Length: 170
Ligand SMILES: [Zn+2]
Image (tube, rainbow, N blue to C red; front, side):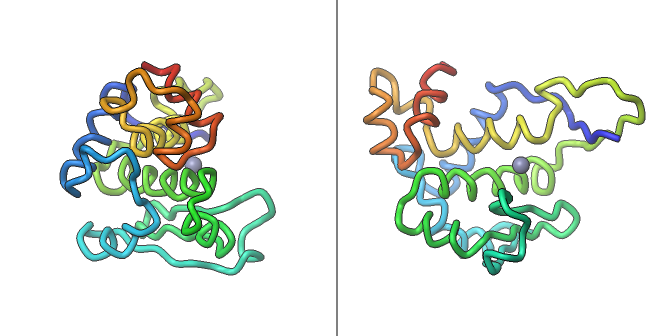
């Protein structure tokens, strides 16, 4: 059984990312301080909470997770520490979980369960939506025109592959 969600385009999620930045007064900033914002988000976003867990509490290869029933994001200590030190991959991991919270818990894109084996279309796939929104949140589309991937990686605090990916999605 696959879970699918309301279809959302990159344009929709780009607008959502911009609204989130605007609410936080960060619409003109290249660097989105996702990890520094966790406490603020917990205080201001109804239903959002997070906890830092031991590195052994999630299976290897899994860095964080979001409980869509409770709105709780759980982040491995090593990922949290890495993100605090500015590691792009760890920052993206946290943005990804926050994106799951936003799309599934806060904005409440409707969940559909499909009982057949049809593959999930990208726009209805919660993983695609989280990946898309996280990328749009950390790499603000309206500010990175004309920048190189190296500059985007440096100024937005993302990995170079993530920077290149976002620049391609223009
Ligand atoms: Zn995910």
